[in-house]
Length: 221
Length: 245
Image (tube, rainbow over all chains, first blue to last red):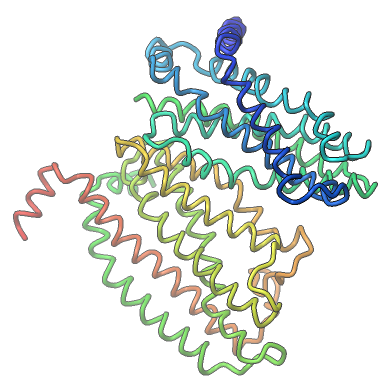
């Protein structure tokens, strides 16, 4: 797993040089959040009710925005092809992509959650639920978007297609995450929803990297 | 078993097999469809609660069952295509996807038409309705992905991969009525328990389900034949076939 460290270093260096790649989705997340109070009206109770859905839809859209460019550059300049041709461990490359994708798009959302709670008038229990669901849900989002990006890397019309592929797979996560937050706002226990989210995450963590691997391979062959 | 299955990997064999099966399957499908639907729509007694409007069950339930059944068939074909790299299996994924999408759309539309008089609304965000809608999106994703690549072979493989990943949704749809308390009723027919539906309504329903199944197979034969011809158009056997006609 020495290779994994090398790949992660490379990805981080690339991210440090291309700040727009991870800054834009984060800015986009905040802008979408700000649009909702302007669109539906600034009523605090209404916002509190709608917060679970708003946060999770904004998170999905920003992750999708970042996903589109995930493998594009490496595909265009031939890195992926070289890795496949040189029989390098492609799995390490995929895992490095996953880790750095979460670090650059998922983690900022988690870190921004206090700001989100402020903007949407969330109380402490709902904020804790938001933090927990984001911690469990954003890695799953990263996994799914990496899969979508790998499937469409050599496609001619990647952007819209990526959304069409990923959205159906993302819906179960959306349902359980907003159910957990809803339960939290009503001071009900939400361990069940969190457990299901964790189960989905572990299941995806075991299988999605393999699917990403074969998706990349079939795109370069 | 492999000895028996092996010839099926050859496109030419499959083409001729589908050609032989298609007329019989289509004849059987049309007969069963007419029998089941006319019996179900005109000659069954009205429901004591729902009156005549329940008769849409003879279209709604078969298409809903087949929307999931077709997906499993597609996923199995996709799995075969990915594991053993069988080209015919890849093409059949693309041949099945639109059939399944249409079945799903029929199930959704008839369900809406049934929901309006019974529930008083065209659409509710209920677990089963939502998951069926997701299924439609999955089908559309598979179809769209296959067309997105300049290389058709890559598109077919990518679609197969997506079809296998999407299998995760099938149990969610199937058990959604049991896991969540929803407006949609539970299953009336199960393999193991005594059906909670009167035999006079059950038989036409079963015939309709069978009819939809056979229709799917017939359409699959037709579409797969076309797909094989399209992909193999430069092969000598296709040229010979075209020259012979």
